[in-house]
Length: 400
Image 1 (spheres, rainbow, N blue to C red):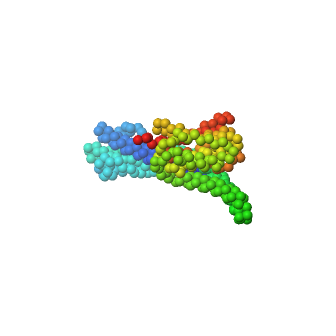
Image 2 (cartoon, rainbow, N blue to C red):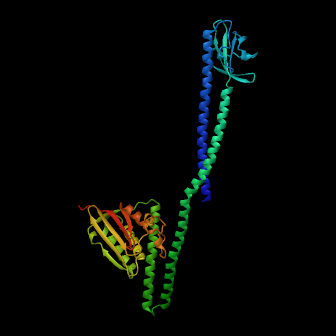
Image 3 (spheres, rainbow, N blue to C red):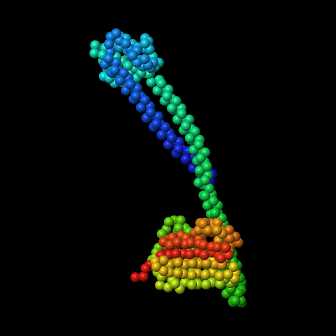
């Protein structure tokens, strides 16, 4: 799980880092282009304004800006006059500048953006502006972007680590539950196998000398084999559910599945009173799968007999009306703790009252899946000293 957590944290950090880098680069590029374009427009406007209002002798300090330089040159580019801040430097006059385009050049150690405008007497006014202030602002912006992205990555790495921990925590719990489940399954299968092997050994030893003991051993073997078959069936159903398999469905009489579940339930009853009131399901047809439905009701009956006291009662009752039919399985056991009710249909979850009983916490999860596959529902209710009550509600096929 540590490897998964590290990978998740790195993934989130990388994702945020790439996003911030793209946003920062885009923002910086757009701002730089905008500022440089503004310098281009500025020198072009200044050149045009000076050319429109020039007079001799030339007054070239008209803009009074330390980063703006003006120079009048003749057609061959020789200096005629220049602004005071230009000193003895000479601004270049290129062919592109003669046509009003803005050029970038370095004069001395200073980068400049320049353009020229004709004065009408064979001379040109060259206007240059230094982008040093803009470049300084852009450097400061880059520094701030690096600091911001760095801080954001550190924060993302920390939050990603915490988020990854929260994300894998359910997986940790699931793996732990799966481990316990596998251990429980191994125990559940080992116990009946051990008992079956013991009875087979006993039956082989007795041979025909003690028919009663052999018959009893074979009955015990049959009971344990049925128990193992039920568990394997549950595992197969769970595997199909995880694989997203769709249950085959056809019109079936609901009473047959309930009756078969009751037949299997009687072998679980022992000293518990088992009451069946399912006459209301006569002629009720549903669209579904008889085997899956039988397994659903067997799960509910198995739970009921597991928790009912030796002198208690398990009841299965049915109602039908309109376009719905319901089957309720109830017992007189200790019931379900109110804090467990919201979670009893979760896989591997075992309630507080499950201590001392066998099972891996899969039965009710499978029961819910089967009910939902039939476009129905399963609900649980309980109260102090009145046992548990599970109700399966299914849509029926209307009578034609």
